[in-house]
Length: 191
Image 1 (cartoon, helix red, strand yellow):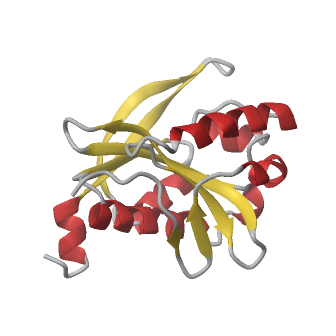
Image 2 (image 1 turned 90 degrees about the vertical axis):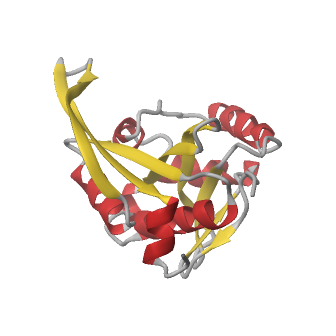
């Protein structure tokens, strides 16, 4: 099995697909210019159509690489982009990836992040050569921790005071979760 890149994934309520330039308006309206959303996963805010289109062009051109994984999270009932989920880092030598996600504040607390993450976990272990997925959340972002727990990821440790907020002159913990292919297959009765 090899890495196959970003492919469309469908769940009950979502479609996870490659980004297109048609996502620009939804992204601006829902999440990419929201300082809280973007800072929770360490990304800058984008405030103009031009800056979002420039970012999208970079992402879209990266889809030619079969080791690139980034999905637009589309709410089926409205055909609306409400967030994203991506491998923010991938280590091909050791067969693992770091995963990140964000969902518009309007759509948080409804289970969309958990649904998207669970679908990407299944895709990863059933369709790619990766053996491990991992993620961390900042201590103050407990909602993200709940998403990781509900998505079968296991708590693996805390790096105390390892994240620094320059604007606040304050430290926060990084709380790590992970899942390996063997555990996923056992949980799904596939091994």
